[in-house]
Length: 536
Image: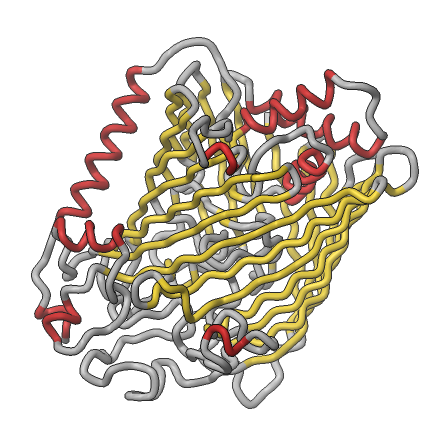
């Protein structure tokens, strides 16, 4: 085994421990009057839709395609909307919903509790929160001070490998000026996609991490940089502490997003996977990983050079364009993420493209939304399949490449699920969805997906020598985590989210015409999920 030949290093693990202690020390030193909870978290579809509406109307300024989103930015947009002239009823309803949630986040103590139950855990995971086990319950209490927010919580799930208990609702956020440092199990979502994100999404359970985020995306008042418009930097590092080939390997996520015009948002994204028990983790590996030059992400001749590589890297960009046509808002977006390939030239691209339309339904404050989104995670040259494909290498595809790696055989995954798009690599997904939020803030929604998992079907692990160097191919390589064989099926979904005196009740029904890991047979299944969430 290669792992046994590699010197052990603790540099990365020590860095994480030191940073965690720093966040805790800042929290102990902070005290004062209450302030708004700093971060609006991933998982609330209606919240995200309302943010996009206010962004399109010009009230929320700066990038909004990276979550969690600072409440400071949302609250500023709500204040602009309330201070102006009379709003259309559907915009006023969105402002009121955000104002109510912002007021809740501003309380000195906020309690969150959620319980969900389902007979079949969903294969697909969009921006919303869905159960990860047949029974999934969690609760937390968040304490907000002038410069610190501490959320203490725990959860329990059935049908989980290992302990059923988790501490995922827990998080510490410390504010200093226009920045916030955080530590805990904060979920990340990079990019404008609604049914998935290629780099970081909620596909897998959140792993423990520390990070820093710019709260208000003010422009940088320097030559050239001011042309970028409002700018936000997101940077975090986390530990993959699950059962894998190189345990406690380290993941770094970086996103620089900016809005050169109010209608355009651009995001530059990067993920690094490095260190881990049994992997070299010295200063040179860490430096070379961040530098990114050379052939740092691909196999080199010779075992010694292969072992010394700094790690796995994925990088790319996303772009969204928003425009209002009367009372209808249209948002076009795309995302491309790829393996770093020889001196930061992006190759082996995964692609996602979509359009969202939103507008009023009648004149009483109801809102409709429609979305079409297509993703392709079969790594290929950027323009593959288009008239421009010769620019980036012609009809070139790289099966078993996306989310898999020569060095980290468990791949870009956590607890056996991809950290990026829920379909995993070598997959295509087309989704058409719609939602209606009525004047009573009840949300009714539905979708249809056409899914093709594991298109290449190269084996799990892939055929020796086909896509991997036989010298470096161990017996525990994992290429496809969602389905070990090719599966093509449809998923139909219909649901409702209804506010009640007891809390927010959600019911979702799902039917899929086949299932992962069912070769040579059809295995359709029907699922119902019910949940109750209370916030006070």
